Image (tube, rainbow, N blue to C red; front, side, top):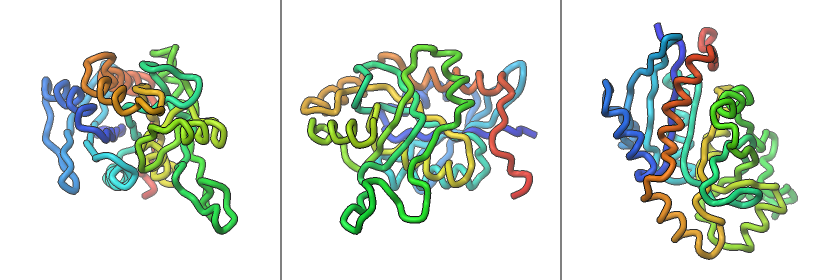
Length: 244
């Protein structure tokens, strides 16, 4: 019996293609959820084995939430995400980043007296798993760690970028990670998001993003596949479903 079941969520097809190509070099099965394609395969090392299910979820918080809830529901006890992000503060184009806190910057009840991002009666600042962050930093020691903010918009405006920096101390912005972190937080499933900075979230962000998204530089999928082996070898134990 395989105790470790890892779910991987990727939003963009160009970001997913290298991962899929690597998976297809070994033994795998096609996987799908709500019409979204994915793959199911096993990773073995001398110290253990993990079942991995990956999903190309589609862009945006709703797509990411649905995919995450599905992976948690089928018993994934670790969730990983990777993709490109806009750089907000303290990072440069090409930097590898680990997000340790997540907020939804477009959740706005300020009109009825709440703070931006605040959700009445519940936690609204979500956190990545500290042990997974430590494990990754043991392999990629120069990765940057900081706050990610997510919203259903592509940030390419300096005024909004400065707001995200000043209001939240954001390191990066994207369109999925906070939604994934929300599901993992309330399901108590360990989560890690690995991101690469593609642009500065300013006026030329769209061109910079497109250029990096179609390049073959620093494949995040390679980092993820290597990290899965590191998780197995470390003896990391994800959420236990014995009591479910």
